[in-house]
Image (cartoon, rainbow, N blue to C red; front, side, top):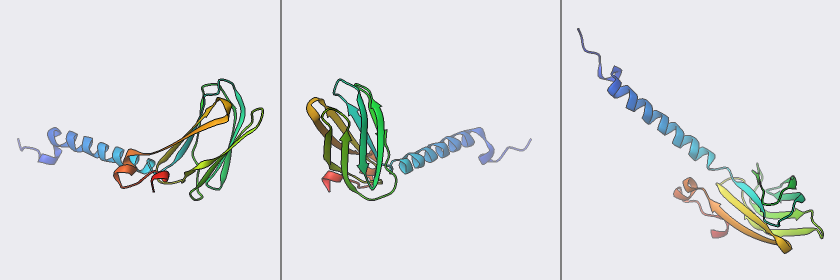
Amino acid sequence: MKPRPLWLRKRFLIPLFLMGVLAVGVGVAYQRSDVSSLVIYNHTGSVIPAVRVVACGHSATCRALGADDSWRWKPTGGSETDIALEVATEPPMRWQGGRISPRGGHRVTLHLWPGGEVEYNTQVSIWRRAAGGAAAGEE
């Protein structure tokens, strides 16, 4: 009986397949890390009827943000701009600050606290940080 070639043996094919799957997974993770997102956390202790966010030339509205709830938005297109936030509370609250870019893997978090206080934080995905990226406030 003639032995099979090396590339047709299980000892070779299984690790080769697993390395291929790993390479595809890393590639997909890196590509998805370029998308930025904005997350709003409600720590006010009450339901907020509506939250409107304007950034990167686009706007989005979240209706009924519950107490201790969060809402995520991914801006598409546009350029790096300040974030404008309008909260439908009594009295109405407006906040502007922080920067976000639709690309670059930024994760901007806004924490809404009682009394109209807004806490702003920016993080960059680990893949973009390794590739030399920096948070919008660090540039």
